[in-house]
Length: 366
Image (cartoon, rainbow, N blue to C red; front, side, top):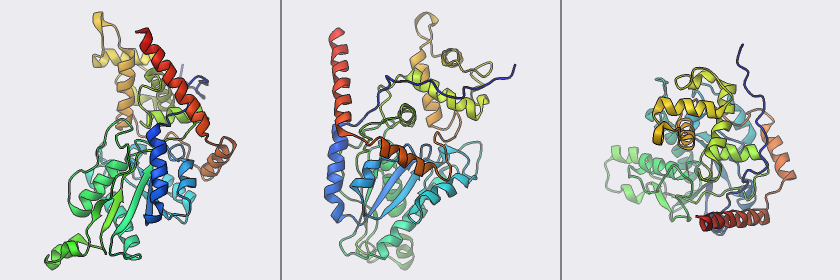
């Protein structure tokens, strides 16, 4: 009998729907206060969830400010040779500038998916920022603010732009979990000023490609949506690391991942299981035995194995595919859904209070 993947994921009404923390709100307010001194906003979104990683709060908070949309982790969302999805996404935002930046992990020898491809995509973004700064020459420097949902790769992008733009090392902390950046940073130089290259020989000047007073990038904390009305959207964000792994059960997340993997290609986990399955416990037990993730007496550590499975996908070793549907009208449909379920700060506060009560109760029972 041929394998039939699930056509829908079962509803989860009790799933947490918020991860809007105090530093998210404070960060958003700080961004608003700085907006008058900002020349350009770079908004980062995760390419694997181009619709779900869109935060409508930025639409209101940054309204009227020129933006460049940067889709990060491009190589984790499918073959870099397939430009069909990129073309559709560019169409969503026309005439705004849209860029795609890769993580730089090699896969199956695919040309352009490794470090060289990642550097090339960063160079292209630097060219866009340089052109923008040149048309608005400022002696005091060009200020660019980078914004986005938690863990979409803002700090990683800043470090890459700094490394390629001025040859300096890592300046922003990065991590696998969200919340590493908790405050709006001061500007970090990513492109030299004309004064910086005084005294250099002509060859060095050409390589440095200075502009005005330089270009400075302000890193900001990731800002989550106050309330996520759709359970599947919350799971997509959790799978991509926008919420901490303790917020939603790893087994539930692994099951949602299995649902997607089976629809793409069940053979992606064939080295860990005898055949395709819709049963997550069956798969996790098989994975645990294959990888040695066993507890005392040989018992399967299901949660640890679920986290391992999720991390395999996050790093591109359990399939590279998108979780959002990419079609011509997808963005318009997402906006209609948002209008019918406006994000509410009151909802976020209520959810956060309930989460704290549950956490304190659990501590008291220990």
